[in-house]
Amino acid sequence: MKSTLDELAVLAAIVDAGSISAASEQLGQTVSAVSRALSRLEQKLGTTLMRRSTRRLELTEEGQFFLARARKVLASVEEAEEQLALRRDQPAGRLRINAASPFMLHVLVPLIGGFRERFPQIELELNSSDQIIDLLEQRTDVALRIGTLADSSLHARPLGSFRLRVLASPAYLAAHGRPTRVEQLSGHRLLGFTAPESLNTWPLRWSGGEGYPIAATLSASSGETLRQLAIAGQGLVSLSDFMTAQDRADGTLVQVLTPHTVDTRQPVHAVYYRNTALASRISCFLDYLAERMAVLQAG
Image 1 (cartoon, rainbow, N blue to C red):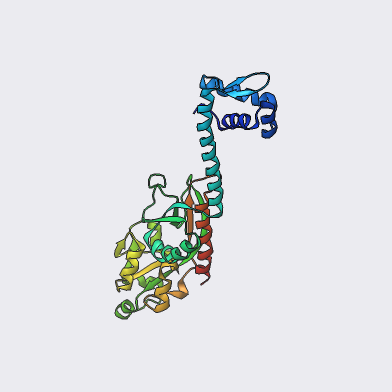
Image 2: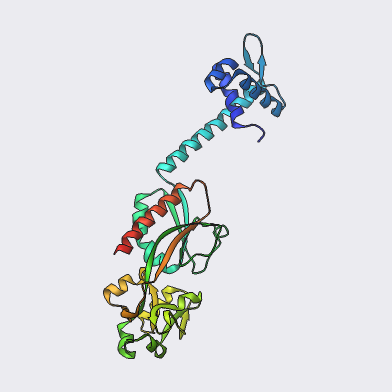
């Protein structure tokens, strides 16, 4: 677009005020600045928009044609600015969120009802992936990531952390015995992650120090798969509190080796592109999630 919004506004102001001097007062600009803006606009368009005389200014036919459309542009911009201001007070639009399936199922899904009630104009799109995704490629606004973050060009907001524990089902312990020393784990079925390998270092203190590296007898890429396997009595597992709190509360899974457990926590971060002004639909979601996660961790 050759013309600027300021130049369109100058043209409209001159016509509405009746003169360049009156328009300059209305716009808070000098007479020469307003006159130059009009001349610049005419030069860009390659046509005369106003006939000038010592007594008055009059729109040419081309000027009338152009001004009618310029007013529509100015009105559209004004409406867009008003709508944006409203969205800051009442966030709206589509919000695409990505998280690993266990976090999606055990943390986000229970909170979605409250969020939608508070922000009914935000349209949520929830996607699960147990792998690190490219936010731009997957058209994602916010990704929730668990564990230590790698260096990234993305902005990260810490949301909290959840404790890791070693767990098993009562049925497994009845069949295979309850370990009382870390070294006894070598004689048990151990459920581990296919990747990253760091998740297969369990939060235990033993003769080799803090952090016990396991040799998994059964591996899976998803924490939710490992949780289901543990509930089914297939072995011991180390999982985060966010996905096992209810299991421990109802006795489906029980903690083992409690005296040997080191207080180890998995941090949770929200990552998103660096913006000077974060979209309100994103910031209100992050604020809500941080608020609700603080309650979950306190519990």
